[in-house]
Length: 275
Length: 231
Image 1 (cartoon, each protein chain N blue to C red):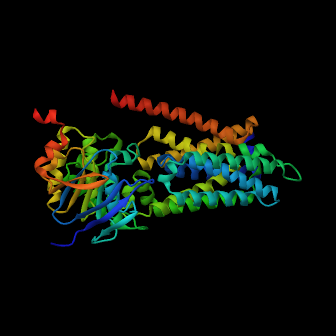
Image 2 (image 1 turned 90 degrees about the vertical axis):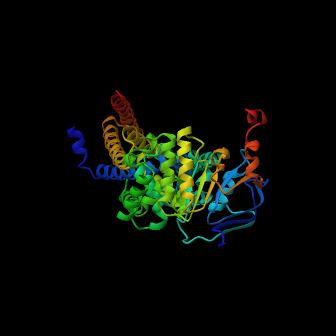
Image 3 (image 1 turned 90 degrees about the horizontal axis):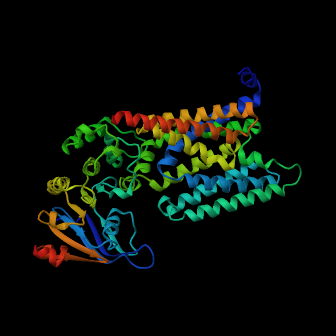
């Protein structure tokens, strides 16, 4: 325990913790919509496509984050233009996007001149790499997302529940869907650092699903989802530090345990209510 | 006779290459209570979606003469088009029907809450106010969707198979409710079973790519196989 507290003296550990916390808050909130609208596969597709952009920029000697953001945002705009309804019948296309992004990223990184960037750091996350810029990106995205969710909350909820009805009521369903995808795109870039490309979708899905096992009401679900995400991030980072494990898988492991506990508690709660 | 609120003029539309509805003309105006019947895939829902503006016709024209640009059409979708397991309380779902009035960047007001409460009471749902959507029976959920469609004070009401997933008692209740609403605003209802509602409607149309007005006298022959009609 004292080892963990000592670790907090180190700047990069504090950065890692802050970035992971921001990412967890972001995912806890956005994840409720990702799960509600059943678009986890889109988030995953955007993440893997972004990896291609990341690799390209590393290869060209530019900031890899620029490539990741550029491609993620471009994907969000393109997918948003297609619209949620059409995308559901185009799931194979997302698979193609996923595969090309991944392949391009790995090839570019393999051919990047100079020191070889650590591939597994991008794939599975490495919080040791969280810089000041990364932290600013994480915190900025979190603030932006929370602000937009507060502004368009009632429309986003209505759209997530019943897109057609929201459209009939004059809600700009298409624009809001693109907005949601753009927030997911930024979140994905933040998450690559903490979770790695492969595990990006974990924090967007596991905490909201765990929350859903415990409550059926939206407000408590958002709160529980955020708390579950933050607990997973902190627990995972501690596990990662103590056990010298990659941060992404460690966070997923903790989230999975929380999910199992939540599912069990939810089932017991329902049985007790029925009895 | 005032001008119709909604009008399809020689509308043709399809999703792929083949048209699903072809050269369809229909007027919905004051006093109308129209039932829309037809085989699966015949274009019933497509016609409704054209009226709603969810689809743009290949050819022809959809004319809307509504009192406001947003929220003037009350819409009751099929259960299959939304997520029944979504975390949503009954009163919050009904309040969605006020989105058109409220507009972007303005939170729901006390007036919206009051309107939702009134509408729930009117449809005998007040005690389910705080229940989750997922906990409702088919008939209850259907009434919630109708409350949601009516709470925004629409000028016309469109319903997609409102009695498909409910038991017989609920069906009778819903049909009576629709007849009541039809005295105030025009209604278009897509239905599998027009015989139950035929007596209350002003016209029954069949759509099977093309639209045809059915004679109320022969309706029962049309919708029951001959063997059954004899019984």
